[in-house]
Structure formats: C-alpha cells, structure tokens
Length: 335
Image (spheres, rainbow, N blue to C red):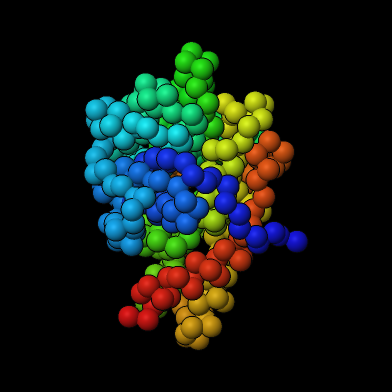
C-alpha cells in the first residue's frame, strides 16, 4: 500500500529554487513554504509563469530574483546565505534542442556551470539538480539502471549528461555535496499545454477537452514511465537532507517503475475525462511520423533511490493522472 502521509522533510532552511516559476519548481516552492522555510526563487520567465508563484508574492519568507542563470553575477547573488539549492532551471524539450542546440547548451550547460561555481563560492551545503532520463539515450536495457547508459539521441540529452559529469568533477575537486535526479516524464498541475514544445500529457488533455484529435508521433507503441510531480517533490526533499555519505554525490532515477504506452495513455485520458464530458470518449486519435530524437521506451528501476534516499512514490501513474486531470479541468475545461 502506498503511504499517503506528508511529512516536513526540509524545514527551517534557506532554499534557492532555480526555475522556481516553472511547473516543477513552483510545486516545490509550494511545499517548502508550508514547512517553515525561507525560499528564494530565481527565474527569468522564459518558460516559467508569474501566475505559478503569484500566491507567494506577499509571503514574508518568499523572495523572487528575476534573473538568468547564464549570468554568473546573478547566480552569486542568489546563492548568498543559502543552505540548499534545488536546481530546476533548464531549457527542456528534445525537439527544441534539435531546432536550437546553441540556446539549449547555453542554458543547460553554461547556466548549470555558473550555478555550481556560485554554490561553491557561497558554501552551499547541498546542491540537488534536475537530471534527465534522456541520458539513457539509445540504451535498450529495460528497466533503466543508473549505471548503464547509452549514446545520447539529442542535444538536450547531451546537456543533461554533461551536467552529471560537471557535478561529479565538482564533488571531487571542491568537496561539494551534489545529487542528480533523473526525472522520468514528469506531469501534474501547472504543466503548460500550450506552445510548440508542450509535454504530451497536457497537450493530449487539452486536445481532448476541445474535442480535437490528439496526435501521436509514431504508432503509439512507444512507452514512458510517467511520474507525478508529487513524487519529484519528495525526491528533491530527500536528496536535499539525506545524511548517508554513500547517498551523496550520486545520481538517481525518479520515477514510478511502471510503463505506459502512448496508446494506453490516450485510452486512460478518454476514460477519466469522460466523467466530465461523455462525448470525449468518441474523439479519434491521429498518428503521425516518428519524431527525431525520441527514445522508444522508458522504464526505470527505483531500487537505488529507495535504498539510499528512502524514496517511495506516493502516486502511481493512474492516481497521479486523475489528480492532474482534475486540475486541468478546473483550469480550462470549465471555461
């Protein structure tokens, strides 16, 4: 049985969340502020949204720094007096990285390096960063085990792997405490369904609510280990506070350990959305060409995270999907 209890894991700390106005970052900030932490949000609003953090603007323990991680001085200012950095800032999306590898590299590699240097200079106690399942590349091994990766399939994947290499070097060279979390297809409230690079779940949900056919790239057999955002929040908190030396300066899968094909995803979305509007069940699915850089299958083992971080998903895929759909319907389905 999944434990639904919530406990304060990070408490009475000063925490910097980069990319804090984004989908994942803002959910993390929500959690931190109810646990009596002082939270600093660093965001340049290139993909983050002001409405995601609007409810915290008057909170006495919340500070917003509007700035870019590509600016080293900004990173230095943000890291002053910080106990923990939860680094979520990045330019996501495999297709975007294929269309514009230069900007993806500038943000994800140069920006990441700036944050490492700033955290080192400020004496930050723990630096937790968002890694990616894209690092597994063309590895056909399932489930994905942290120590076995393949060749990257996109510029985005290259940048996230470089993050891991830099973290390893900084840990050894500067005696820093760094932990990488390889996120597997995170979804949940505030994930933007709009724009050219929207993630698949909000994109499909929006299409179905509008009675438009969701478009699958390929035949729908590709599968993902979809991970609800509450699980990601828990993993960040545990990585930020774990004291076991064996757990530090390591990389972990953050997932549920279950696989869902895109065809199965669409079927579930229709089923859950039909409770709000029965006609959604009749919407057809379209199929298009396979997308360059896509990994065919994604399934994680979370044994390492469970053993060393005490990570245990509180939401398996179907549970998380129902919560996310409830949020989406309230946000734009009723309009």
